[in-house]
Image (tube, rainbow over all chains, first blue to last red; front, side):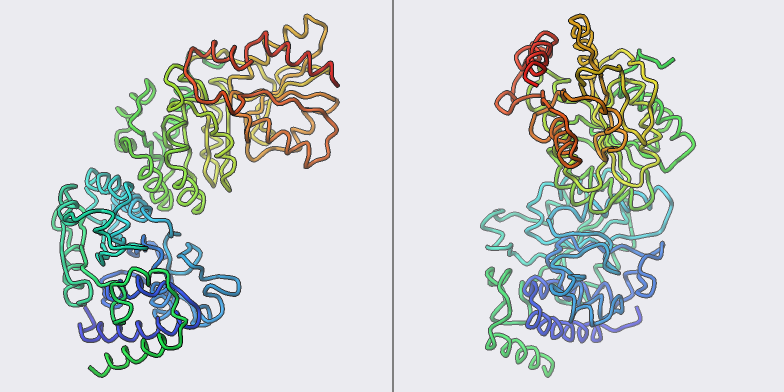
Amino acid sequence: MLVTIEELTAHSLRLRRELVEICASKGGHLSTSLSCTDILVSLYYSGILKHNPSEPEYPDRDRFILSKGHAETMLYTVLCDRGYFPRSWIDNHYRSGDCRLGGHPDKRIPGVEVSTGSLGHGLGLGAGMMLAAKLDGLDQTCFVLLGDAECTEGSVWETAQFAARHHLSNLIAIVDRNHIGASDKTEHFTGLFDLEAKWKAFQWNTISCNGHDCGQLVAALMQAREKGNCWPTAIIAETTKGKGLSFVENDPMWHVRQLNNPDDIEQARRELQEANHA
Amino acid sequence: MPDSSLTMRDAFISELMQFAKDNKDILFISNDFGAPSLDRFRKELSEQYINAGISEQNMLSAATGLAMSGKRVFIYSIASFITTRSYEQMKLDICIHKVPVTFIAVGACYAYPQDGPTHHATEDIAIMRALSGMQVYSPSDAFSAQKLVTVSLGSEGPTYLRLDKGLWPHLERTDYSDANGLSVLKEGSDVGIIATGIMCHRAMEVAEVLGKKGQSCRVIDLWKLKPLQTSALTSAISGLSMLVSLEEHCLNGGLGSLIAEFILDNDIPIRLKRIGIPDEKLYTYGIRQTLHSEIGLDVESLVQTISSFMETV
C-alpha cells in the first residue's frame, strides 16, 4: 500500500466536503453517500482495487460494482477525483444538461462497470463476471457494494448461494451496514437478525469492521483479497448513514431529502470544516 | 430431410452442441430443467453446463455478467417462469447492457395445458417485444427451431426463443432466411392467415377446409416477431384485402397487435381480424384441444370465424 491510513482519512474528509458542495448545487443522495465514503476511499485510493482511470476498461482490472446505485453522488465524486472524467461533467451534466451523469450509475460513464439503481442486481452481475474470470483463469477480483436494506431482496441470496456453489473466492460483497433503508430503520422491516450469520449460513467468509475506519476497512479488504479458501467473502461494514453531518446522521428522512436549505448547507460546511481542524 | 422426431427444444440443443464443442465460450445454463438432448450436453461438455437452480433473478444477472466477460450464454427454462419471474432482470441487466444471451424458453402458451396459468406463457410475446433490443422468435417446427442456433450465435444482442413442447410435423417451406423472418407456407388470394408457433399447423388445417369451400387461403408463418422484417411482410401480404392473425397468446400485445401496428404504421389498405385468447379466458386449466375449443382456436370455430369475417368485408 503506497498511502497511509492518515492520508486515506484525509481523502475521505476532502471528498465529503466535495460531496456537500455537489449536493448543494446539483442535488444528489447525500446521506447514503456519506455512509459509504470511507469504503470507496479505501478501495479507490489504497491500491487495493486494480484500476486505471486512463484506460477504464483494461482487461485485467478488478471490477467494482455499486449495487446500491443510489450512492451515485459519492461514486461520481470519487471517479471524477481519480480522473475518470473532468469536473465539468459534474458541473454541467450531473442531473442536468444531457444528464451524462444521471441519478444512478450508467455503464456508459467511464469507470462504471454496470448500470445499477434498482436493488438486488449488482451481486449477480459480479458473480457472472467472476465465474467467467475463473473459467478463463484470470486473476481478477470483483468488489460489490450493497446496502444493508438491499439485502432484503431475495435475489441477493440467490446469488449468495450461486457464488458459494461455484466457489467464487474472487467475489467480495461489502455491505454498508447503516441500519437504515429508504424510509425507516431496517429493524422495522427486516426484524433484528444477525446479518453476518446470514452470510455465514450461505458458506461465505465474513469479516466485520468499522466502515468509517479506513485502517479497518483496508485490513478487511486485503484479507478478503487474499482468497484464503474457495469461498466468497462478505465484509459487514458497520456505518452511520449521513456520517459526518450531525443533523443528517441516522435520520431516515435524509435518504431523499435535498441539501437545499441555506442553513443546512452552512451547517454542513461548518461541521466538515471543524472536522478538518480536529 | 429435417428430423421431425425431435422436439423444437431438442433440435435446438443438439444443434447448439455441435457449435459448443468447438467454442468453449458457449455456456448452457439450465433453470433446473432437463431434456434428452441436454443429458448429452451435460455429459460431453460438463464444463460448459451450469444448473443455476430455481433462481431466475440471479440466473439472468449472472448470465449478463458472464456475457459481458465474453461468454455466449444460452439459458434454458420454462417460458412462463423466465419471462415474468425475472422481468426486471430482463430489462435492467440483459437489455440495458445489450448482452448476447439467448433464452430457450420452452412452453409456449398452453404447451403445458393441464399445469395451469403458472406454466402458461400467455403474454410472453407482448412483454418480450416491449424490451428494447430483444429479438423475439417463435418457430413452428423442429427444423425452424434448429435454424435459430446460427441466428442466435450471430446476434450481438439478446434473443428470446418461444418454443413449443412435443413433436410437430415438419412444415414444407421454400424460404427460410432470417432477413425475411417469415415463410409463406401456402399461396392463396382470397384471405391470408398469418400465424406464429404451432398455430401455423392449425392455419394450414383451416386453409384446407376453406379451400374445399372454394376460398383460396394464403398461410404465412411469421417466426421472427421482432424485429419485424417489414419489407418481407409487405411482400408476403401483397394482393390481399383480408388478413387474419392467429396466435395462441393473449390478444393484448401479441401477434395480432404487432400486425395491427404494422399495417397502421405503413398505411396498408387491408382488413385485419385478430384471433387469439381474449383477456377474460387467460387463466385456465385443461386439455389443449379442449382449451382451443373453448377459446375458438379449433378448426371448426376458426373456419366459422374467418368465413364470417370474409362476409363482412
